[in-house]
Structure formats: structure tokens, C-alpha cells
Image (cartoon, rainbow, N blue to C red; front, side, top):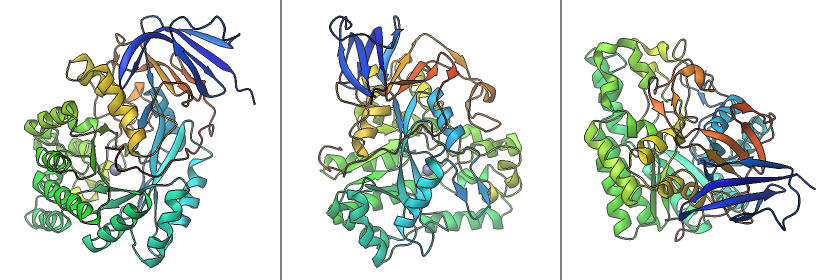
Length: 470
Ligand SMILES: [Zn+2]
């Protein structure tokens, strides 16, 4: 079927491995050719975009989003569904997400997959996959994993804390062994549950109940310890592991040390940990602090500096958003008097690429190539998205065209997420795309959404190769 053709002419193509002045020709959803002065010899095209002065890069891949995600304990749902959330993503240069599908207690992973597909498919405007969140480990679940991995669902999320989702070390090692055997990947939220539970109870008993106490109930040591433990269990099981949202120098150091001794561990961090710090929890700010409640919380500046170093030197491999959008009024404010009642998470799918672009590339901490690696190429490689994250013939034509000079002043109203605040209000960011292209189709066209609801497709993901994914 002819799905049309598009030529992007006159831009600078930037990939994870280099840059060149080149045109990009797309046809039938795939990249057909990349090179200087394409046009003659390739036949007529349906549309030509003049990308003079722009950078042409792989579309962003966000492997950590929570859309239409329920928090059962609090009876709330994230504010974005798969329509508003993926629209926000498209405006922020994201062309693929990997979200989550939650296993119910007593339910199978297969049932979780089927249910989740039914939720996402009608709404998504960009391509999608999802990790299955394993909450209830038993013989049947372990027996399902091999088939799931082989059928395009190779990654499994686990929480080492969070009451209703938590699994213990005994279950974690079983999951790691099974994943290692079949080409799967365990993706772990690492915090020491005993310590967090104890510290929360201690805070509440002492009357320290306001939103700011969320942060002191989850100090860096609880993250570093659990990160080290997860890595050690993966090492014992001979399985690869991905550490979710590294926020502290201790956790980053455990990842770097393990990689140096040959453990197959990769890690992500998120923009909030790179541009915000623990000053957002200033007690004077009252309930406003609830806007910044997420787990793990933001850290002191020394940790922020360590994360930038880890991104530059390669010991952290990708930046995802952990987009978990809750409205301030009516959702976050439910916990003004008790921080344990605040839904955890920040909106960030739309600002992820611009933050890493502005604070990484524009400020000189990262090369443009490293930006592409962290936001597209590495996430694709780590999570088995073999058709995405590259600009080369045969790859999916997922491309963003960015004017590196264009600046946007951030307010909630210029963004597209269905929330009433942005944690980045007041920042000025470069790196928003002029055009976002998904499988050769322009879906954001100079500020206008041109994507139809539900056009996004499930991405077939390959089993994980623990050697190349590093
Ligand atoms: Zn998350």
C-alpha cells in the first residue's frame, strides 16, 4: 500500500554516531535514503519540507510513561489518557512510548497485556509498547514469561517498594532467572521498602505530615542500597537488568562499578533529577510542594552534578520522563496535610527532549550526538525497538526537525498534558520540534496537531541481547 512520500531537504542530520548536511527521503513509512542532494533519481515526492537551519534527528523514545495509570490505594488515575498524553509527547518530539500494563493480584500477565492493549490502541497518536508490571509472582506467571518475551513483550517492571505493587527479593530473583533464560529484561524501581516504611511511620508519629516530608522519608541511601541489591541479584541470576530513574550519586556509582566489573546493567535518569533539586521541598512553600512529590524525590545539587557526569561519561545510558501527571487542584492537594496521600509523579513527556537539549546540548554538557543517543537510540536498543531510534535506510521514518535557536517560555498553558501546572514553569527551553514525523506522516506541523486519534501502532519488540544492549 502506498502511504506516501516525504523529503526533508537542507537540514543537518544528527544521529548517535555523527552529523552531516543531508536530505532524508521517506516512503511508505520507512526511511528510504539519506544523503546530500536527494531528489533527482528518486522520483516524485508528495511533500518537501525545507529544513534549512534545522537539525533532523530520530524521534524521541520515552520508555517510562504512566498514561491512564491508576493508583489503586488513593483511588485516582493519572490526568492524561493515551490521547492527551501521546499528543503532548508528539509536541515534545516523542514518536514512541513504552508505557506499563499492571498485573492484577491473582491475575495473569497475559490478561494484563490484553486489557492494556484495549486501553491504548483506540487513543494513541504515536507508536507504543508497554512493560508488564509484575506484582504477584507465582508458577503460572513465571511460565508465561518466555512466550511473552518471544511475542514482543520482553521487559517487565518490578517495584522493590510501594505497598500494593511491591515484590520481595525472593520473587525478584525468580523473575531475573526467568528473564535471563528467555531474553527478557527486568526493569526495577529501587528503594529499600523496610527503610521507607519505617521512615514514613516515624515522620507521621512526630507530626511531620506536610508535603515536604515526603523527601526526607526517602533519602538517597534507601535508593543506593536497593540499587546495589537489585544489581547483585541480577549478577547472581546471570540476567540483564535496567535500573529505573537513578537520582543519586550513590546509586549511579553502584551502576558504574557493576558495569566496570562486567555486570549487564543499564540505567536511566529523568529530567526532573537533572534540572530540579531538593530546594523544591522548601517547607515555606506549603502545599505547593506537592507539585514536586515523586519517588524517588529530587536531591541536593551534589547529586544533580553527579548525574550529569554519569550521562556524559556513559555510566547512565538513557533519559526517560517517568511522566506521571496528576492535577495539582483536586489530586495533589488531597495530601496537603498528609504527604502519604499525595499521588506520586510529575508531568514531563513533552518537556523531556527540550530539557535535555537545553541543559545538555545548548549549555555544552553533552554533544548533539549524545543527546540523540540518550533520548532515542539507546532506549530503542535497550528495550528491543529494533526498527526505531535511527536515521538510516530501512528504519521506521520517525524523525523530528528542530530549529535549535527557537526558544519556548514554559507555562502549563503552552503544553498539552491535561494538568494544571508544569514543574518547569518559568524556564525557557530550546529543542521543541517544528515538525514531528511518525512513520513518514507529519503529526505535528509547525505547531498544529495533524495526527488522528488512534493512529499509533503497537511496536513489535525483540528479545533483549544482553551484550549489545549495554
Ligand atoms: Zn515510573
